Length: 430
Image 1 (spheres, rainbow, N blue to C red):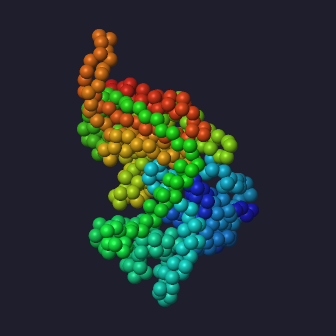
Image 2 (cartoon, one colour; image 1 turned 180 degrees about the vertical axis):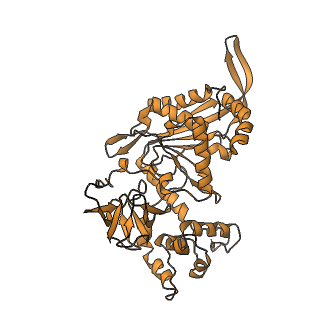
Image 3 (cartoon, rainbow, N blue to C red; image 1 turned 90 degrees about the vertical axis):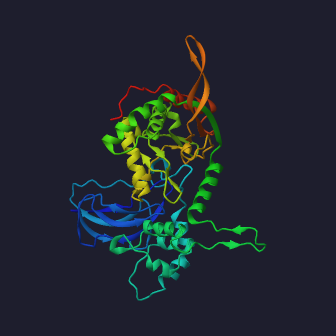
């Protein structure tokens, strides 16, 4: 028998630490591979951490409420002598840590900052009822203070976590109800002259602001545009959507078709699927596509389709619908948000024609698809040019000019365009 260290696994790119919420196993307990042994919080999700070994948990190296660095040891486990030890995690190398980023959407700030800056409010909430055994994670307490939730209000929120604890999803659901008028709204301060209102940024808006500024500071943004004839895609979708809904119960949207074209183009131009670390370019082997999903509260989140090149179109359609559904039901796991190498955003869902999306760090490009509109267009035929009605869409491609030249950025955009315009209308979706 020997003793091995269990380390804190990656929780997502730019997540360098997390907070221990609950130890699910006690010293002396037997554990098996994939047993959940502790629950942790980041500012994305509360999630359970599986054990990488089978054996006996001999010692905890952390306790509840500890802020733990990714890759650091959290427990000692006694295992058989022939068990292979877990290799240390390269926590300082961004290219080897999964991404948890959202394109023009939800973007996190460093959790340690939230914990350290909010230390006094955490104590303040914790001391309101000394006799109470209620436990609130630092993440929940941080959100409570940011959103002006009083200790009394916090105590009324029903918990769905372990031992009925209030989770991040519980407090977000409470805030959603409050915004819809089912509870008291967050305070708004009116200016002295009475003509303007001063509205405090909420937690999400502060995170978005920070990450957008950071991305513009890091990357030399350039945006190219192309107008794509989506008529073949539109006609094909119209022909198959009823059958698809009957057989699957889901809708066939444009999103999987757009993602398929992006994946094919990435395989043709793999140097768009990279990240930058200092003066090094990290070429990614996996093609992991992040897709923006609108949430019920109006925010966006970007779940990731891992190894998107391994799916056919029906598989992509199922994956898109599954991730979108779980995102709207607040059922995404940390892994669902991790590892993105390229991001797409469907701004056409908001009837926007085009936009200039901001790159998700440390990726180097992002694509936005505008609304599909019927327009008169010149159609070239062997018999001559004709004027007809076509379904046209603008595609915007923002890329980091430090490492992606205009030629590569433009050729990649044109290749996506070509795959969509030459879409095979005889293919099956089932």
